[in-house]
Amino acid sequence: GVKQTMRLRMIKDAYIGDIFWYPPDRKVQTVDGKEVAWRDIARDIVESRMSGGALTLPLLRDKDGHKLIDYSPPQGVTGITSIFMWKKDVDLEIWKALEVPPEIIQASSSGSGFSGRWIPFVVALSACHLELSELIRCVDRDILRPLARLNFAAEPRYDIRPKSLVDIYAKKFGARADRLPAPNDS
Image 1 (cartoon, helix red, strand yellow):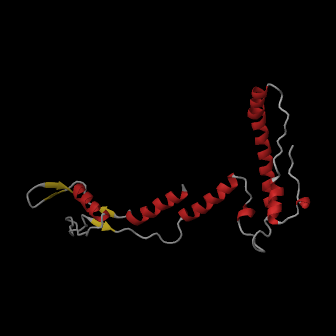
Image 2 (cartoon, helix red, strand yellow):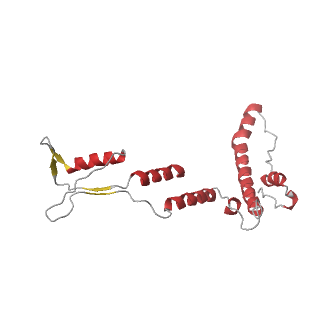
Image 3 (cartoon, helix red, strand yellow):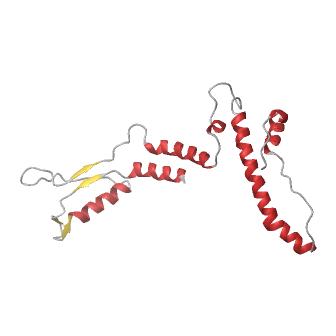
């Protein structure tokens, strides 16, 4: 995901960015008399550059004095790039998709630790409890009860009552569960 994309971005910034200008319609005659297109020479130069080899280029000009070949090394990326902000945005979007209030994850502006985050946390736990209760009802109705009927040839007599996530966390963090809003099971 995000880390791999950022890693690829850093590699791209580190190794790509060279600009090599060459005349596409010209050829060079080598010492042994062979003609080679500038495109092939440019490819060899770029491959040498990518592998860390030394780079030497002739200073060639056309009849008007313009350079025939030119090389621009990679430029550093200045300032903050959007890729770093993107990771932060993706983190926030993941929490939003999970319907977790940002107040639970981000530090509160006043106080410390869990201060100021208990109420949003209770609201999120209540929503999770409702989803869990519905999931348990569906599994019971569609899987467990039909299996019990098949196995025992009678209507099953049992109830499944999931524990309240709010109560569990209230005990864990020392809050009084009787003062917390009860999750709605309807």
